[in-house]
Length: 417
Ligand SMILES: Nc1nc2c(ncn2[C@@H]2O[C@H](COP(=O)(O)OP(=O)(O)OP(=O)(O)O)[C@@H](O)[C@H]2O)c(=O)[nH]1
Image (cartoon, rainbow, N blue to C red; front, side, top):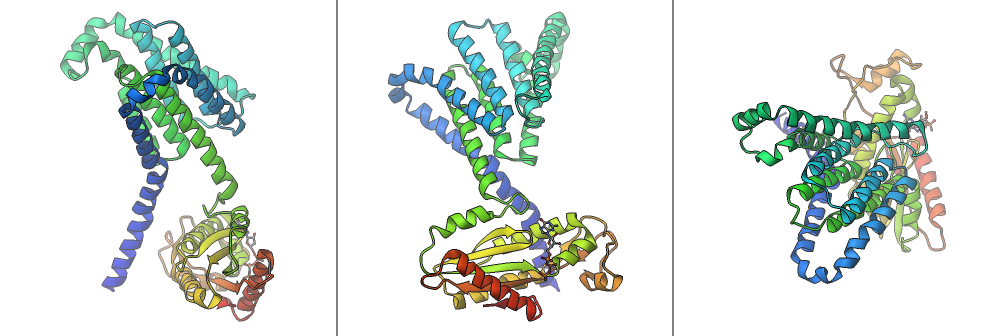
C-alpha cells in the first residue's frame, strides 16, 4: 500500500515538476546559459577580436539582415519586426549619437515593444495584422514618451517618491522604473511558456537593457551579432522540429523515421504499436480525450528501454526501432512498455462525453472514480520483426505490421513477432 502511494507520488512529481523542469531547461535555461557563455568568451578574448573591429561593426547589417529575412520566410514575423527595429537603431547610433533624454525614450519604448511582442502571435507581414503591429510599435513609443513627459512635469513629486520608496535607483535612472515590472512579467511568461522564440525575445530584452545600463561592457555591434545568431538558431531549430516532430505527441514523426532508416545497418528490429479499440475510445470519450490519450501513450512509448526509439507513424499507430538488436532481445523491452501502458491509469481532465458506445462497454473501460476525476486505461498491441538480408526498411515494417495483426487476432494487448 505504502509502496504504491510512494510510486504514485514519484510519478506525480515526475510528471508535473520534472517534465516541466526538463522542458524549461531545454528551451529556457540552456539557451540562456549558452548565450551567457558565448558573451563571456567574447569578453574574455576581447584583445584578440579587437583587431577585427571594423569587420565586427559591419556584421550586424549582414547577420541581423539575414536573420530578419529568414525569420520572415519561416513566419516568425515578430523576430523580423524586432530585427528591423534593431537595425534601424544601430544605423542611427552609428551615424549620429543620441542625447541622454532620447536614450531613455528609446530604451523604454524598445523594452516595451519586446515585452508586448512576446504576448502577440506571429502573422504574415503582408496582412491586416501588420497595421496592428505597427500600431503596437507606435503605441509603445507614445507610452514611453508620455512617461518621460509625466516625469519631467511632476519632477518634484517623483523626486520625493524616489527618495522615500526607491532609494536603490540612481536619480538619473529613475525613468527606467517601468523596465522592472516589464522584465518581471517577461520572466514569468518565459518560465510558464518556454519556447525558443520566447527565450530569444527575453535575451533581446536583457541585452537591450544591458546596452543602456552598462554601455562600456561590450560594443553594441557584438551584442547585436549575438542577438542575430540567437534569432537564426531559433528559426532553424524551430523549423527542424516542425519538420521532424509530431505536433500532438512531441515524438519524432514519420519523416524522421524514414530519415533514421537510411542510417540503420543490416541488423535492427522494428516494432509497430497500435492502440486497441481506439475508434471506440474516441466515440465514447470524444476526440479531445482521444488526443490526450495519444499523448500519454506516446510518453510511455518514448520511455522504452533497450535502445529503442519511438516515432509516431500516423493516427494511433507508432513505430519503435531498435538499432543493432535481434527480435528476441527486444521482446522483453516491448512487453515492458506494453505493460506500462496497460497499468497506466489516465486521469481524464474533462467530463466524460456520452457517445455511441453502450453503457456496458463504457463501464468496462472506466474504473471506479469520483465523477469529476474519472480514470481510464488503454492497451496496445505490438508486432515486431527483425530485418533480414536483402530486405528494405519498408519490407521489414510490413513484416512487423503482419505481426501486429497477429497480435490483434489473438485478442490484443500482447506482443507478437
Ligand atoms: N483523437 C484522435 N484520434 C485519432 C487520431 N488519428 C487517428 N485517430 C482515430 O483512431 C481510430 C483508428 O481506428 P481503427 O483503425 O478503426 O482501429 P481501432 O478502433 O483502434 O481498432 P483496432 O486497431 O482493431 O484495435 C479512428 O477512429 C481515428 O479517427 C488523432 O490524432 N487523434
